[in-house]
Image 1 (cartoon, rainbow, N blue to C red):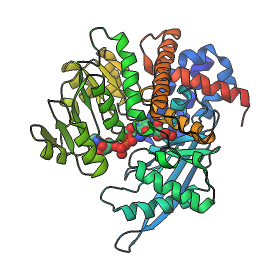
Image 2: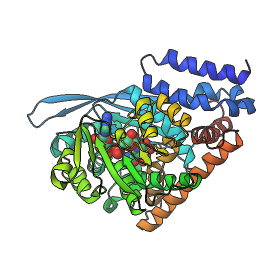
Image 3: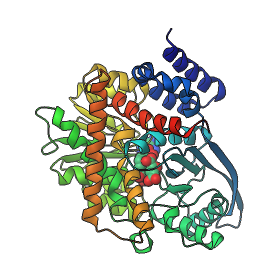
Image 4: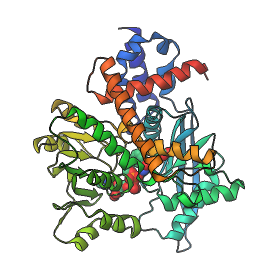
Length: 449
Ligand SMILES: NC(=O)C1=CN([C@@H]2O[C@H](COP(=O)(O)OP(=O)(O)OC[C@H]3O[C@@H](n4cnc5c(N)ncnc54)[C@H](O)[C@@H]3O)[C@@H](O)[C@H]2O)C=CC1
Ligand SMILES: O=C(O)CCC(=O)C(=O)O
């Protein structure tokens, strides 16, 4: 076995041995390391510099108690985390997730993915992720605010505009970012806008950050479709999963570009609307009223809500998983293929299981991996940081066109790198190798730290 292959095996064994029970983290690392053989064989300096051993270990994991008082006066205790995975390219950067399933495993997988995704943006961003097992569903505004304040009272010790810059993710949208930022200012006494992104435009946010992940995903899909004769967004039939931030704005951009988005989902079921989803109504129900998706079908009429069923049973040309990890498995991928789906691009982080990806490749479906396809959100957060540093506010069109340029560039880089390393069309390999090279070169240059 070559030194390169031995080092890759050793890294995989180490991840399994050091992280018992952390199945998501192990899955994420496995997917990346599997792609790296060609580049590590060509560059012995990566093995000599211990890059593989170092890149799989977070620089720091902070875990803390988050006590808060609910509306009945009862004290509740949640667990909070910040995984500061890598600062080789810049400040740790990545969202906060509030969901009952959150644990260290979830955040290590997300932090690891974030390192590579952020590298692909071309901006100076390291990678991190944080969150809590707090479940915002059914909580009053007051409860959400008190929880956010308690969470930030501790997190504030670990973040800063040049150190670690959180943002939103599942369960953390504009409302939560506002409460978190307010508490950061209160406990530190500093008006440091660049400490968190996803802020409202009126107090240091950027235009188009709300839309960025979904819009960016569709710009990426547009680029992928250049290699898919006979299929364009215009006239295509699209299915998205989820009905949160990423799903909603992916659906909006796809329909602006002429697609018909016929279905979306939440954790209880999916809605099928053959005329194309009414995205203003969806946004009102999910974003403003914070109701379940079934309310959409009740109000819209002439469409069907399928309780407890998988949205992947709906036939489509393009599938955009935008909900959560491992939501699209091997069976779902087979069903999509049988129903004629030709392109799948990941809006969520790691939504396709390893088996699903095998099926997707075997069936010849074009595949856009999350690290590349959903990088528009963090890229626009990088643009928000840039505006904060210059005390500027660019207009919507400027941010949107920068986002489009970055997504087009990420696609071109992933496609060219896949080609260079002998795997034309394999955007997983291309994205992983291109991102790895950028981080690994920065690590080599900065010594063993
Ligand atoms: N918000 C952002 O800027 C970015 C988010 N992402 C990823 O996109 C995904 C969605 O995040 P957001 O839209 O921000 O969160 P969100 O909280 O706005 O929406 C999450 C959506 O997923 C649905 N969902 C959760 N579990 C589900 C399940 N098991 N089955 C079906 N639906 C389910 C929820 O009902 C909700 O509609 C996550 O994987 C997140 O990590 C990735 C890049 C950036
Ligand atoms: O905007 C950010 O910093 C983070 C976005 C995010 O959490 C992600 O890309 O998964």
